[in-house]
Image (tube, rainbow, N blue to C red; front, side):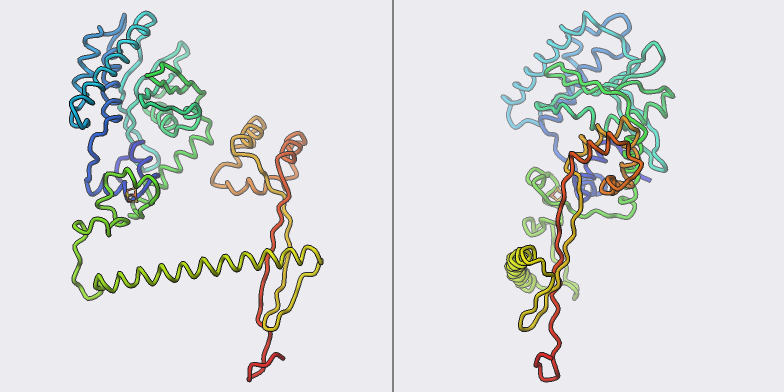
Length: 387
Ligand code: SF4
């Protein structure tokens, strides 16, 4: 089985075809300014901390590591490269000036751990690992992008993988997980992941590994395609890059003009279908308001009879985060997580729910009405007359 990393997992989640083009077909993405800059800052921080017990490395060594890793190929002009270099130096000078006085030796930096989830071999590189007096470890991941979301530390599956990796390979319990935004020198520290959170990420990895085994690489088109570097080889954009898709001449393949006609035919048919669907929606709304007003549940036209049924259900309106805040203290959140995620919809039916949680859920729920209208043609005789 192929070894997976967090980058591969998130690439596959974003688009399985992109993963295939990168990791199977070897369509490398060119170095981008943010990735190159981030990698060079990581090198500088690694030098600052690696193998240092009594104090950090001097600033000139830190900057030399940064310079060695800042790849000019990623930049479209000498000016933009020099600007990035100056930004990196300013950032690292500021970091070193601030953190040299409170320097703490790390247990490890840039630590590559190979481990496994089920049968799937994995690799994670941990930016920094610290050990506390009780022997438990804290893991830090450095971020260098311009923007950073507060809740990322809570949601990051990368940090969950780090916890799994550290506990398997270092045989130490993880105490906390941190994201540090280096440009603003801001840390978000969260507690170790719960068993349910770990299980959810483990399951995700197993599902992706299985999809890779099954060669399930469907393109997932969307806005991300606008900046996808493997787009020229993506089957979803084959028409825009015909040079990469030479026509095959076997008999099963239609001529380009036939396929063009089919494309137009499909466009016309889909437009007609949308028009029909819109008409269905309008007529349904009018019939439903008549059924609501009269209380009747059937009506006949000259050729069709429509029967109606009305269902009323109570549904939760709160977000998953709100629901979690309510259920987790009562130990109920784990049950609601995948694989029985649909249980959320049945939560209100559960008689064993504590009263205070039921009350809170009632406040966050509303009645939802749905209608089903079933038209059936009226019976006719052999000559088509209504019976
Ligand atoms: S162009 Fe879009 S669909 Fe194709 S590989 Fe890239 S992200 Fe996926």
